[in-house]
Length: 132
Image 1 (cartoon, rainbow, N blue to C red):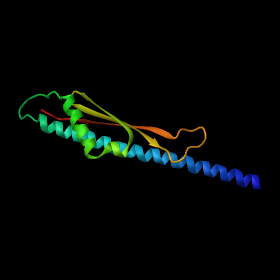
Image 2 (image 1 turned 180 degrees about the horizontal axis):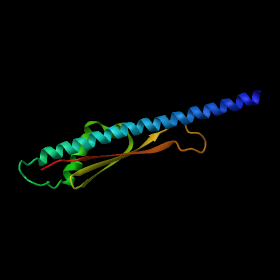
Image 3 (image 1 turned 90 degrees about the vertical axis):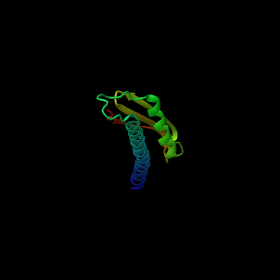
């Protein structure tokens, strides 16, 4: 009976460790998703305001450097580099679509033997800039 109780205790403790680590990675990813959404919306809204041209008749070309600057400004405003470990970001512009990619690492609360102590987390958000 003692072996059975010890075995179940070990299994329950391992389950708690795994669930806690997965929850931490999920919460970091959710926060990274929200930050990516905010960054792409800031870039898209800023670009739409810059490129709004009444009666232009066609889509204006989006300046990728302007999109990167607007994204960098947003990430600085929300102090993203302080909230995420090893934050890396990129901005791509294709046509009238702006895409922001963020990646970070999450330090996991527990590190069972043979498992990594960090998890790589990434997020991507895109927005269409309706400029005419």
